Image 1 (cartoon, helix red, strand yellow):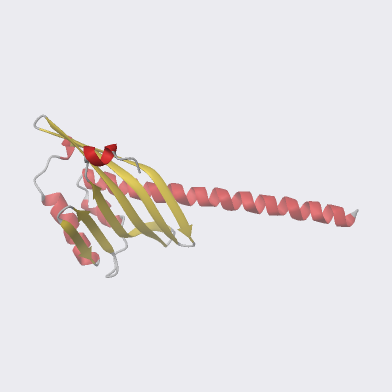
Image 2 (image 1 turned 180 degrees about the vertical axis):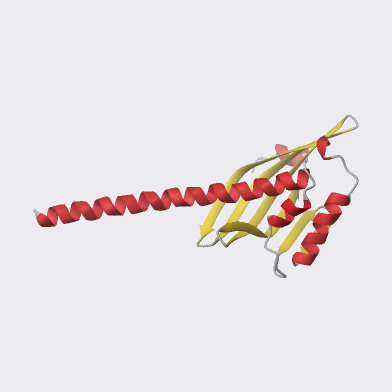
Length: 168
């Protein structure tokens, strides 16, 4: 009987530990999404401190854009910070653009995370409407109990009706 109770206790303990671990993972994923959304909000409200606060401020940090014109890359914190300053100083109306991040895929590895998600932009400028879709790949690191971005790679996905019609 003692063996049976001990086995039942061990199984119960294992079930509790597994459930706590899963809820911990979900908590971390929500925290990661919150950092990404906060960085987006800071960008569109032109909040330099908010943009900078989302990042690991080290020489190894990277921010890359892949467009039809090629790759633009900011290597190291100084270049990324300068990119943030240029974004804020640029003469543009942030109110003409709405952005939605969707389809998050988050893989956690201890204190690091790989995140892939879609970014959908609708832009209305002087009555002209356009849509821009991106795939974003981010690597985040947990430092002092806070998630920070240390790699952001954005791939612009051109809208091409001919490609849209092809079934893969």
